Amino acid sequence: MNKNEKKALFSFLFIYIGSTVLILFILLLSYYKKEIDMVDRRCSIEMSSAANMLKANILNAYMEKVPFIPTPLKNENLKYGLFDKNGKVIFSQFENSKIDFDKEASHNESHSFHVAKLEEHHDEKIDIKYIVIETNQIISDTQKLKIYISIILLLATCFIGGIGYLLAKLLLKPVREKVEQMDKFIKDSAHELNTPIAVLMTSTSALKQGRNAQKMLKYIISSAKQISQLYNDMHYSAFNEQDIFLDVNIDFAELVNESVEFFQDIAITKGIRINEELEPCDIFMDKTKTQKIVNNLISNAIKYSKKDAQITVKLKGTIFSVQDFGIGIEQKDQEEIFKRYKRGENFEGGFGIGLDIVNGVCKEYDLKISLKSRKNEGSTFFIDFKSVAK
Image 1 (cartoon, rainbow, N blue to C red):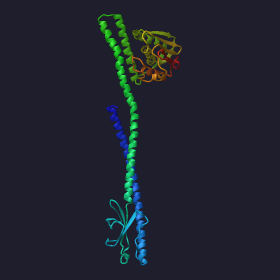
Image 2: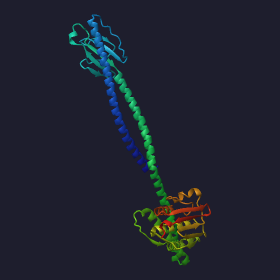
Image 3: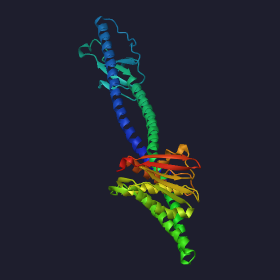
Image 4: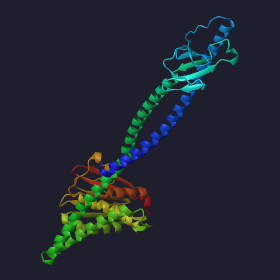
């Protein structure tokens, strides 16, 4: 993974994880506040009920003129204390807790308190003025809730981070493949153009010196045509969606003959002979796209043929075929060969866009394309122009 890919990956993860965790945090915060409110209300009700029960027991005891004997509350989470009007302890289960008697509800770092007062008209008879209920349930439940939410947030962040990483890798994969294809395409372009350019420069230099002018001229023409063919394929592949095309009546046999004549100069440098077997056929297509089909099939046949071999170009009825006796294509690669940048195994390389162009035009005009090939015996491409024949 290069620097730019890492930067894009981290940027995506930061935005994705950050925004998702922020939303999750807001939701958990809302949940936390609701839970705390519920815990606070529940404990307040429990403490208020306990205080009222104690108040009733104290009053009953004094009305019956018997001493009030403090006993533990049924709720083990609650403790209580009884104080006189001066705040002096009469009975207490507390451990060094400071109590604000002016507040009905108060809290410190570890406990919550509820203060209930006995009515004034009992003051002369009853020593008890304040009933204070203490609980640590609110603080305990709050701490547990914080831990619970923190664990959820941590696990969710890890999970979201993992999903985000997988998504980022998944999204970057086609981009990475495209970049690798483009890098490979540029390297192949340099290599593919280097050969005809080198031949062209060498032949030009030899021609200036007057050596074997006729042979050098053939090399120059062949190299120029190879460069022209490469440029045309590259231009069509890059700009075919922007160019304007027009379907016209075409003498297909004549067009094929022109393409064969064009490639004769390229084939002759490898000692390859192109044979023609053409029957008359008229079609209605764009001429440029038709030439792309014919030119790329013939060009591939030359490229993947051995030296001093033969190529047969046929037009029988509406079936156009190009047969070579070159390296052939294995069965497992025959479906993949029409994909862009997919190349055969050949030292002469190529861009891997020729058959992709052919396949694209065939799909556009509903032309049926088929292939027969055997490894090291050669290949034959068939295209049926029935859908555009006149």
